[in-house]
Length: 135
Length: 135
Length: 135
Length: 135
Image (cartoon, rainbow over all chains, first blue to last red; front, side, top):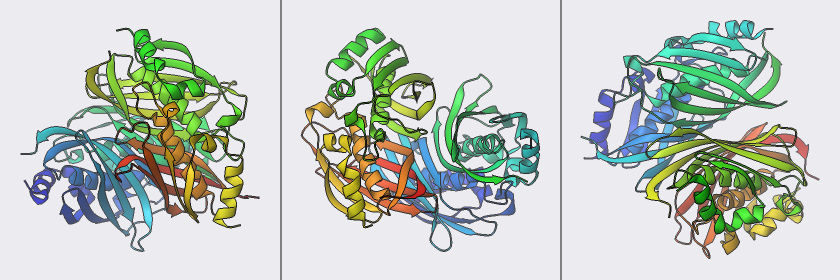
C-alpha cells in the first residue's frame, strides 16, 4: 500500500482533522506537509490560538507520516514547545519529518510555521509500531 | 482576584474549550478539575479519540490552573504520554495539580482518567509567568 | 524473581550509578527511592549541579523501578523539568513511582527533592517492556 | 564577548563535562559540536551506555550553545528520546542547533550520532534567558 493510499484510508473517517480544516500539501513515506487557517473557534480566552489546536494539527501530520509505511502506528509520547503567539486568520504550515525508524518505534520532528516562516510550535513525537498492516 | 473570577474571565471568550464541551468541576488556586464527553467529531481515522483532543482538554485545565494566581501565564513546554485508547461516548476526567510555583515558571501535572479511573493520558506542563495581572 | 533480586543483578555491573554514589533506600515492585550527595565533580561551569547529574540519578531510579517486575525494560522517552538550583554538598532524594503499567510500555513519575523537601527536578519517563525475563 | 570566550569561561570550572571527556569540535553563536568516547564507567547494569551519559553530554552541548550569546541561560525543560543501544568504546558525536531564539527563551535540537552516523538520542531543550551578561 502506498503512502497516498494509507492517507486516503486514514482521512476518510478522521472527523477531527476535518473539523481542523487540514489541507494536505504532500504525503510520502515518512513525511507529511499540510496547512490550515486559524478560525475564531480555535482561540482561547486570551484571543490567541488554543495550544490544543497547534498540538492537534501537528499530531495529525505525525499520524499521517508515521502510518505511511502501511503499519498501524500509535502515538506514545509527544513533547511540544510553544514559541510564538498566533492570531485568528493566520495560515499555519505543518511539516512532519521522520528522524528515526526502528522495528518497534519511530520518531518524528514536526514544525509549525507562520506565514513569515517563523516557528510557532516544535513537536517531537515517538510512536509505537504495532506490526499490524493497515487494510 | 479569586481563582473563580479568573476562570470566569478566561472561559468567557474561550471558543475552543466551549467546542470541547468542558465542564468545570472544581477550581482553586493552582488546581482545576473538569470532565467532558467524547463525541464522534473528536475521533481520528481509527475510530479512537484524536490525540489532539486529549491534549486540548488537558491544556485547558493546565491554563485554568496556572492562571488562577491572577498572573497571565502561558504554556511553554508540554510532554504528554498516551496510555490507553478511548472510544466515542466515554466520559473523561481531567485533574490539574500544581507541582512547582516559581517566580518565572510553574509546573503542572495533569492526569486524564476514564470512567474506571484508569489513566488514559499523562500531561506535564511548564508555564511562563509573565508578571502581568489578569484584568 | 523479587524486586530486590532484580536490583542486585542490575546494580552489580552498573558502573555509572556507582560513580554517582547512589544509595538505595527502598525498592519494591514498581517503586524505588534513593539518595545521593552532590560532589564537586558533579558541578557545571556556574558552580551549580550539572543537569546531567539530576537526570542520571533519576534515570537510575527509573531503571530500577521499571525493571523490578523482572522483565527487561528500556527507557524510550523522558521529559525532565528543572525547577531549582542545587549546590555542592546538598543531599538529594529521588523517588520513582509507577503511574502506568501496560503490556508493552510503562510510565514513571520521578521526583528529586532537596533537604527541605522542595522539588528540584521533575522527570516523567516512558519505558518499553521487551518481554524478556531478567536472569 | 564571542562564543569562544563564553565557552572558555564555561568549561574552565565545568567538572562534570571534564569527567565526561567532552572534546569540543566547533562553537559558534547558537551552535556547538562535540564528541566523546564511551568508557566502562559510563555503562549501566546491562553493559549498555547509561541513559544519563547520553543526556549529560547533550546537555553540555545545549548549555554551551545556548549561553554562546553571552547571556546567562539555564535549562528549563528537556525531552530526550533514546533510539539505539551504545556499547563501550564507541565514539559519539553531539550536535546542538538553535531552532528558536526569543527574548525570554530559546529552543535547541541536539542530536547524538554513532560512528555510522545513526542517531542514538534525540534531545529537545528549552532554556530560560536570564538577561544577565556572562562575565
